[in-house]
Figure 1: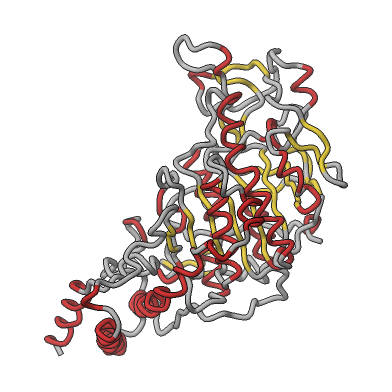
Figure 2 (figure 1 turned 90 degrees about the horizontal axis):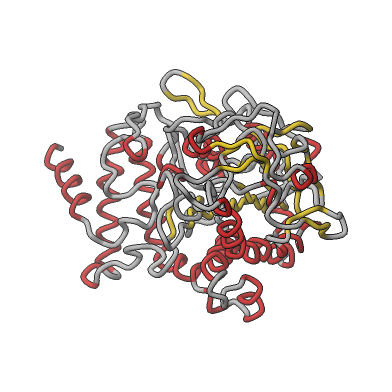
Length: 486
């Protein structure tokens, strides 16, 4: 038996048949029972539970089957994009006398700053949106705009953890992992949870954005690169193509199964076995999903793929639609670093960011709608925070025109479309300057509870036992915001 186990280990460690980054949930390198990214949490032996990606019936009636999240890391400025404040125009340059919380106290100022662009009513609903996002204005009648978001932490990392995992600290499972753990995949040829990254680099926090936390690693997100090859090692080397690869996979499967029978409760091993099977199937299906050559010229034009400014984000939005169309449960699209973090030069930097994403993000909603998919797909556009109504003065002797805005999680905006959300609806409000949510507040936990509800999941019953306690995405908080539901 000892020699058999050694052979299994040797074979897995030395196998080079092109699967190393295809099913990123459980890869060849993950030989130990550890949580993702060295968070120091060892996986529990939980007994003879079974984990798979087979599609599961939602515990409750569902309005949505899938979700696409566009994550604008850094914190888009709500009073410059989504939350018009006439008082800021009126009092531009005046001292702000009310309480304000600065994250960067060294460069803080109490001078109010008006919006950098004009607002105007959009759509039949008359939703007020900035001129910086005219294409999003075209879908005003399809979205719920939440102007009263808030969370408990005022810096990027904890705010991102909160928005993605419901907790302000690392090591927890992300929203995509929870959804796939509960609902499984609608495709047995593609991952259930996909993260689309930016050509200029990984987002802030890297792979923690799609971590499974303490959940079985089968539910971790799979990274899709922004350029070809979209997935590394999709093809096996010539010596292991065809029958040779099949024979090796069959042998590894047999050895893994033998090991699992002698070590019940090792859920990561079962997950790894499922990943090998998925990876083999993906060698055909993934390539087809990423191939845009079958899309019409009108579709490519709608997403802005022929325009250098919008090409990247348009391509990733279109791939997101194609993935959901083929049964992927959760897709998240990231920018690089924290490129919406406009502490300075907001008057020039924010319009540049908007020009890159405005048309593609709107096209995604339009495309899903015209294909009859929007009613069953939640589409989210969010950052982890917003900005302050006062200016932040750059360090040194920078000209005043280079001012920006500091962090603000006391009040910010995001929008959600489809999947049972109201259309052409504005929910909540911030105070007269946009500093803090003041009406119909929506905490991050409330947002998670609401989106899970639309997917047919009761957030209070979605639990995973680890280290002696039951964990939830919403912890012990959260409520379904029924006013936002259609």
